[in-house]
Image 1 (tube, rainbow, N blue to C red):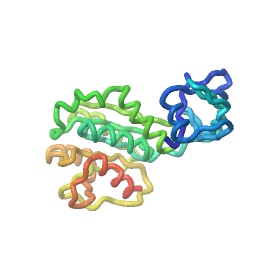
Image 2 (cartoon, one colour):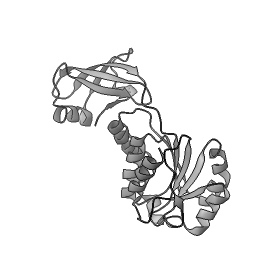
Image 3 (spheres, rainbow, N blue to C red):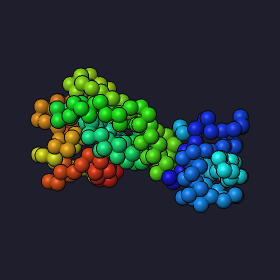
Image 4 (cartoon, rainbow, N blue to C red):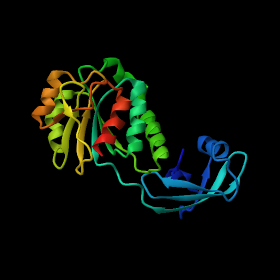
Length: 237
């Protein structure tokens, strides 16, 4: 945790200058930050500004802090991610890393190679997705969570929704077979589609291409989804 991520309910005054923390965040501050009275930590309000939090008092069941939030969060990454639903463990890691990288819009979609059982995973619940997002924000020192959209039907999404996402973006679909080398150091926003570990099937690639996507590759190695996303982002930007 590189940032104490605060929510509106944490404030104990109307001026939003004092916070009382309990539970996991309190325990982390005590055990990891070795909390002491007067110590100043990084803090930020979910969806809002960032700044500092000074420890005023440490009690057995809570910690009181004085908060000053006067800084803007880091700028977002100019990338919209379209992600074929991966294995539940990979989903957890991918959401955290995508959040850490500053991706602010994520579409989780169906694909032929997506196991049907993945859609019933508890990792897709709003509460679990929120937990993974919070971990990513705390890691990156960011406060603006990504918007996550779930789409269970592949063809209607590609044909009906993607045209509205294309304007102003360079559209790329990552594919481990027969793609051109992934571009690098781009100065324009990107709409990036990442498939399962085995890639999208030919029909799906053709449907993306019919919407103007370029097929790109990172090379011959087959990466796990949680590895492919940061590798692609690191090359693109």
